[in-house]
Image (cartoon, rainbow, N blue to C red; front, side, top):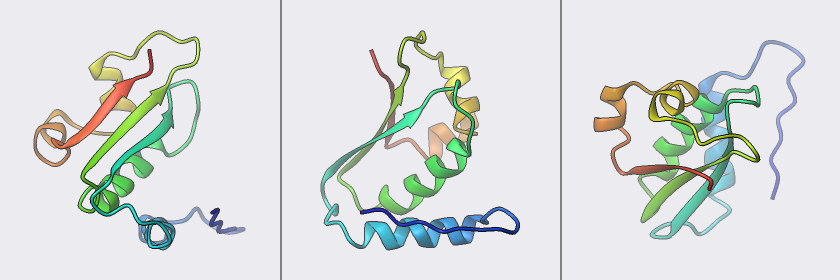
Length: 107
């Protein structure tokens, strides 16, 4: 299922993106399941950090396990510092807020 939101004005804010994510998740039975989300690496531009945070906050409390796999293609694995930068996540956030969320380089 695809949900889209066209905006000819300013970019969508976090509240609207969160509601779209929740709308999509409500159509899937993911409660108590293991979920793997595939995300782009540093070579693709976009709000990856925003989507990581909002998906983690909405799906993380419902899924048994939530992991993100970084699609590297032919690029080298990303070190932890670059992953944190890509996902706009501080070390404190990683150790507290996202401790149960797995983030993996595709090998």
